[in-house]
Image 1 (cartoon, rainbow, N blue to C red):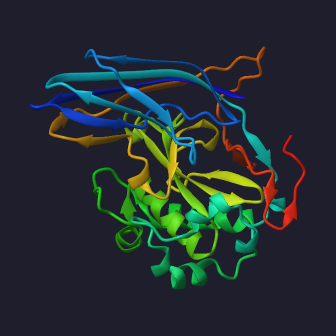
Image 2: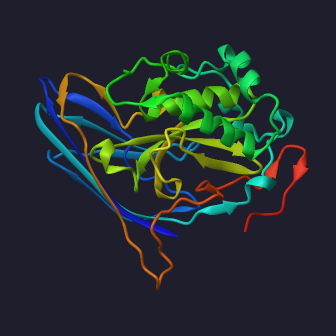
Length: 301
């Protein structure tokens, strides 16, 4: 088990007549990601509305800010109790047997044009044995063929752009891996969160984008940017691509400061909490599916 304590502070100068915001900065609740404590502090006297999307589990906070300074600070303690799988025994799932709620992650999307990457995906990975190892090969290929470099892309950069330019930040790595997986008929989705254990040389802690691929009976974690330790990945939201899970969607005129994020891991031998570390296992913090179409599976332990 990994116990993470973190805070996210966002600061805005809101122009008249005010501005509407939708935030996705609440830690997700899953069977393997437990929110122990959380607190939201607002610098204006506001009445935010928080709801959980039934399909994804994403938690959204909506508010209307008055002109002037707006400060938000969300802090939480989260426990990650990873499902651990043996990579050699995790299969790909034929499309005909995928759960219905997974199918949407097979289709091309705004930033993941998988329909235009079919030839590349099959040339590079079509000959590989199907299963977790093939998805890991996609992840490693993206990590080895794209250079991580800040301020090299923008909000319109897509998987096709990244494949051509071979440079980007975490969201660009994630979009390219997702598009390649979908071109191979492997469901893959975009995940936003934060991570513990990234190299300090990359700069201050920031939001992080990574990938979950559906294999066997659940979504497994992959970090194609290779900047994070998968055991230290904490989820805010999931979607088809970055358009679905922006940490802040803004309807109005504001001036935003860079996010201030602090995260720490707490080891505790008594409770079994350990520091995130690199390991060869397949990891998941997803709830898993008890039933696949056309097959029976034992309930998850």
